[in-house]
Length: 156
Image (cartoon, rainbow, N blue to C red; front, side, top):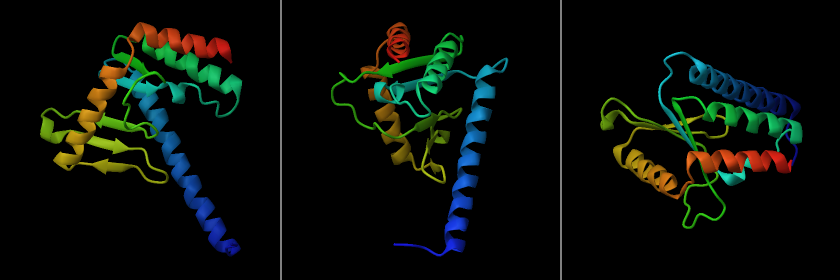
């Protein structure tokens, strides 16, 4: 199926703006992580994501190097869920769980194509809290995560 050139141009423009917003968000998040007095940040990443090679081996190495660097910051906890983790649920989607000063202010951000999706409904937020707790239980230690990242980097 073909679409009219003006529709294709508009769709490409929207995709470009969405991609630009995503990049801007990630740059701001990175700046926040590196800032003095940065908040506590815990990231749990699946081994599959660590092995992705978007942009080639050099880009993958640089990304893994950055993760290793960030993992040594005192306010950052980085843990991985390995391929051998059983009963893993929720793989394939980036989820940000933002804890509020009280639990009813917790928010979930799902990284969706084009537009991020914020969840505020208590039942939905509670469901993602349980998924993240399960991921934390199945993840390896910070030290083993660093070892895994270093091994993946070496294998590139």
